[in-house]
Image (cartoon, rainbow, N blue to C red; front, side):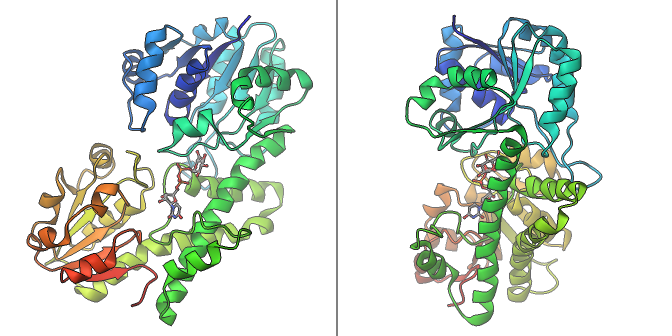
Length: 436
Ligand code: UGA
């Protein structure tokens, strides 16, 4: 008999997982405590922007296999329960806030049927899975718990779920592994590497991967700082070192650094957990990774000040991009919005444009000005800051934009625009990490 699945928490991770598992043929119920989100998902509408997921969700709703509810009792029918709730940074420190993980496991415990498997997908501090497993052994001894970290990238969520570059399962016994193999059979059949680990290793794989990615980005941004000081070009440097397959060219895009709901909070939570474990020295370098990352934002503000004036009160600045990366409407810990807010706090008149992120940005920064169209954002601007590399910004015509602004001054915070094109149209261009 085909397994029935439940997905607890229907944000980016959970909504994607639910729709993708349904597309593999499983009956799936998604549970979320937010009735608005559940109502939208139930009508086949995605509450956030993620390319390809909107149509997948709508298609899967039509099959009748996929449903959403706020009622935890709905898990009673399912055999495998994926925990996909958020683990944000705590309000009072670096550690991850585990409230939602703990409360969702407690909420489903009374309904778990014999032999069911709870599978954590949320990113958690190492040791959480073993503690939850012990908790379940008390409250629902008929069930078991495994950990199956998720590596999906926003913007590629469906692809990363259905054709991931590996599947990692942390299990305490063969039975849990067998159940997960049954769930992922179609994905395994594509040749996807399958890695069985113990519970702590599975939890660590996730934070280690995100720490490595963060380190790569901060490494290249540190090189960008040195390039600016020494008269070099970080984009050429990145290309040159990237040809060495041991280094690889991906995630070496210098600019204003990493943001989002994962990398920044994950490296901080990892440091906090290492400290609890007495291994803080091992992760001391992550503090520097965080510092380099935040410095990249400050460098943009320094360039604006150096070029325009220390006193920014008379200047209008157009910020292109609000989301933490393109093809997402996620503005959590967005470097672009952080820079925009800091410039506004320094007295500049700041207008922000983004193809998808204006509404979420407005919720977080209601005092910033927003423009629906690029042409409105740049009108009369003394500087344009390109801070999120949306495709539509690469398609802008610098001559047309040049007629709207007060000063033709561009800072490319993502090294993604064609500098020569802008320069040939009479613009002063500053690209981070490039001196010529
Ligand atoms: C990240 C990881 O890449 C996923 O593997 C992981 O599953 C996910 O976190 C998670 O923990 O859930 P995501 O947050 O979607 O995914 O974003 P990334 O594509 O990793 O980008 C993170 C940030 O780094 C963005 O702000 C991006 O602009 C920046 N970045 C990325 C750079 O500044 N330079 C680069 O070369 C690459």
